[in-house]
Length: 111
Image 1 (cartoon, rainbow, N blue to C red):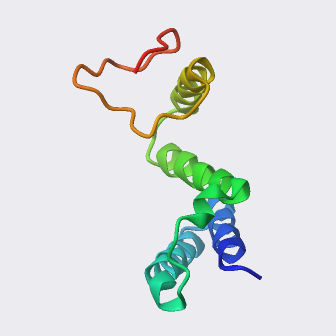
Image 2 (cartoon, one colour):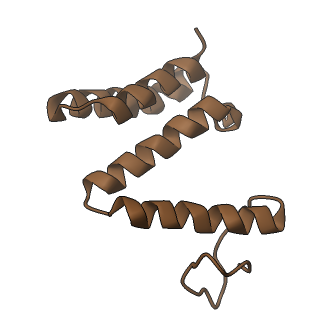
Image 3 (cartoon, one colour):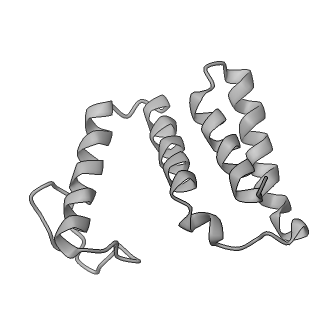
């Protein structure tokens, strides 16, 4: 099993864990896995190109913010707004920042 697949399974397990102690242990395992990547000789960005790992990372992000109290409707609105911007551009910008950054809304297609 490749390192990317193992990392994906850890990330997916973290997003699906219901008990705090299990989440804590899975997060520690994932953090250690990432920390040890250079020693395994697997520290590269290839996992970022893996759609399953990207999906797991997005799930993790969503779960973390939902657990912090961000309403699901807000998270959904953010995802839709960014999806609209990506759709309008035809690509994902490598940076979302600009000097005169405006709040993201679903009607804007610039930035």
